[in-house]
Image (cartoon, rainbow, N blue to C red; front, side, top):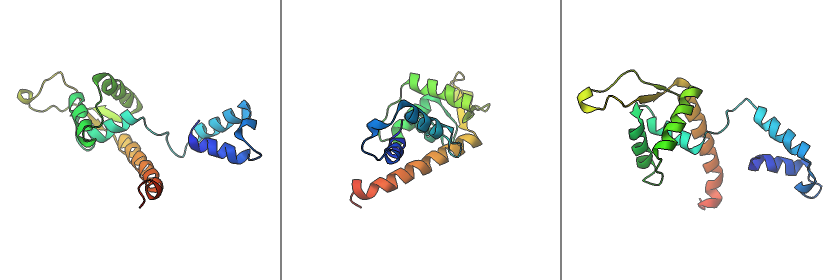
Length: 146
């Protein structure tokens, strides 16, 4: 259960502590939150890094790995397992697609698969960026003293 769901439960059961909430209450609150369809659930960190790394271009797995390192100033290094497992899930979810176009064969290895964002993938990435912006905006005053 997420932090905000716990806060809602705490407000609902304000008679003392959250210890008086039963399993039924907690499961009902989790189910209600999970059933909300107005916003998709947040992406995993790895999925978001991959979507941001692909961005407006087409990239292959190795280039995605390097772009993640570049955009995080070396703070995040994704290995091949994380990259390709997440790419498989992003393909299945329709957030990315494999590109049929290839660069000049003399400049590239033909075994590489190139990926690009779909319209849905762009939309999901934009929604996640807005969610993260709101989170940072609410934390900035107390966390950074601004």
